[in-house]
Amino acid sequence: MSPLSRAFRGRRRSDADPARIPPGQYVTDDFPVLSAGPTPHRPLETWSFTIQGSIDEPVSWTWEQLQALPSETITTDIHCVTKWSKLDTVWTGVSLDTLLDDVETSAEYVTAFSDGGYTTNLPLEDATGGKAWIAYAFDGEPLAPEHGGPARLLVPHLYFWKSAKWVRGLELRNEDEPGFWESYGYHNYGDPWREQRYAGD
Amino acid sequence: MIELIEETAEATSIVLDLPDRQRHRAGQHVDVRLTAEDGYEAQRSYSIASAPEDAYLVLTVERLDDGEVSPYLVDTLRPGDELELRGPIGGYFVWEEVLGGPLLLVAGGSGVVPLRAMLRHHQAVGSTIPVRLLYSVKSLDDVIYRDELMGMAADDEIDVRLTLTREQPEGWRGYARRIDQELLADVAWPPSEGPLTYVCGPTSFVEVAANALVGLGHDPGRIRTERFGPTGG
Ligand SMILES: Cc1cc2nc3c(=O)[nH]c(=O)nc-3n(C[C@H](O)[C@H](O)[C@H](O)COP(=O)(O)OP(=O)(O)OC[C@H]3O[C@@H](n4cnc5c(N)ncnc54)[C@H](O)[C@@H]3O)c2cc1C
Image (cartoon, rainbow over all chains, first blue to last red; front, side, top):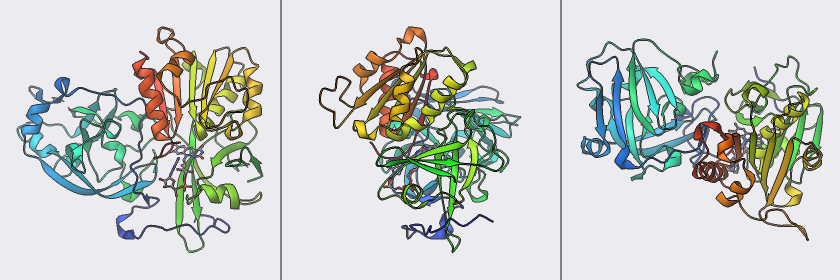
């Protein structure tokens, strides 16, 4: 039980459906930014996306090749560990199912890696089955660098740090290994509905 | 909560005496949770302003007029009230002497809070690592910890520079504009000295400062950032 805060009533400004807001989150119309360092600026000519690790031969796509793959437009809610949630965000990108379609692997985990050295880990199960995308547009516009452009991972059912910005590839792994925030005290899995913010939650 | 210290018209320090206080690292934050009578809760993050060596845990909160939590903390909370905290949290935006330097601290507005913890820690351990603080703020009246920072500047190892972006006192000889590449080139250690840099403030401020440092040739891997909020300041 939390102690009551004397004379605190709260704003409750949002008329959002409470069933859509995970515990401890509040709804914002802004799009705040959580990053550990400077924003990388990657020219599209030198961009590529690679799947490597527990796989016979790494596979890569250039920017143009990625754009040529079937894309999906997803409307989804996102939840950041710093407490904000943003509802009905609209993204365009390629489903990881499409990219992993021809990949034979025994791996059970993936580590996404990004420009700037950022990494994040998740079970392969959470990256497949229509749950994850490589997103390159937000609201129909190219994704801005501070929000992870040119392309970011989008895994909206987990806290948003799992949706690695500036993503450049996936490492398929047989064993789980904590990524960047996961090694600095954040939860290894990060389910917002179970409020798995920090290690031990 | 045992004491409130009015730092500026908008920012107040909240001094807390915690039952089982865990030692924190300079730069970390806590999560504050407020609970209304009907069970409604609001949570926000606040950086720890005090050094690990200080007797009490201090938060410094800037009031955002249309905000939900910050006006409560600044205007309604009174000594004797209880506050529910979670933390300390965060393991990356921290500075300890073993991480070395030279140290460049870049603050926009209330972004100075975790950097002040680093400065106090630097003094508490008697570090000889050279530090520069560049602090961007609207006017001299908005400078949080003004006397303390001026006092620290007397320390040989610590150099404090202000830029007053909106209003300058008569005869002001410091910087008088928003942070840009030229200003950072002036203040920052040259990239060849490999400074360790911490940038904190509103998101747009952090973007400008960090991008400018990278543009000047600083190693992005040695620039650590903390973004406080969505809008510019
Ligand atoms: C790791 C971390 C550490 C932080 N440390 C501190 C600290 O030491 N001191 C401190 O005062 N704040 C700090 N903040 C910001 C703090 O968590 C809250 O976001 C802030 O107090 C606003 O909360 P609120 O409920 O009053 O406003 P809200 O009700 O959340 O928002 C009100 C309005 O203000 C805007 N807004 C929200 N946050 C900001 C902001 N930071 N700057 C400008 N506009 C904003 C919103 O978009 C909205 O329009 C920190 C944030 C993070 C993520």
